[in-house]
Length: 179
Picture 1 (cartoon, rainbow, N blue to C red):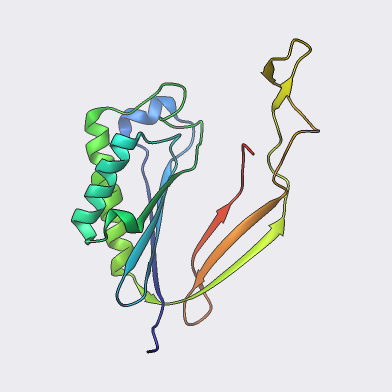
Picture 2 (picture 1 turned 90 degrees about the vertical axis):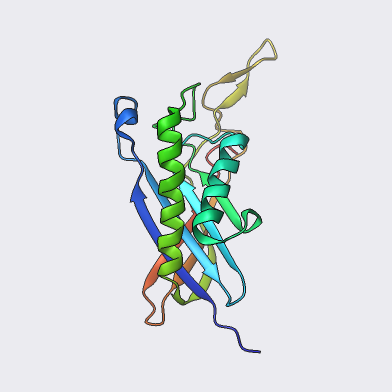
């Protein structure tokens, strides 16, 4: 059986009005949905520090309700930006939690609606963006300081989805900022 891989992508600004005093640049959410005719999977990225496990379940349930994609076929990843709630004890309001769950569910639905035949390409390239910032002091305690001898990940992994004309549908990358 010959199966055609399908891909659809979508993005939106997720900076809540209530979050604006805490952030210095717009926050985004982006989605890539892949489908093979029988199954769909969604990769959701959000410019947040982190989501709690309880809130992650709320997001998964909202996505399933909007799209039918089961939670075990959804990956939710936070960019770990310090420019957003989810770090340093900051969190969003209950009102913003409900809004964001609806927003992400609609974003995944939009990506499903954009599914089209696609080709995936993967690669790895050398790059040095982050640096190790943990070093042991003379007292044997770990402190935050540049550690040029510490572990780093000197590459970036990339997944690209391309349409029938070779144009980019979406590009995902992974780079360890805190190796």
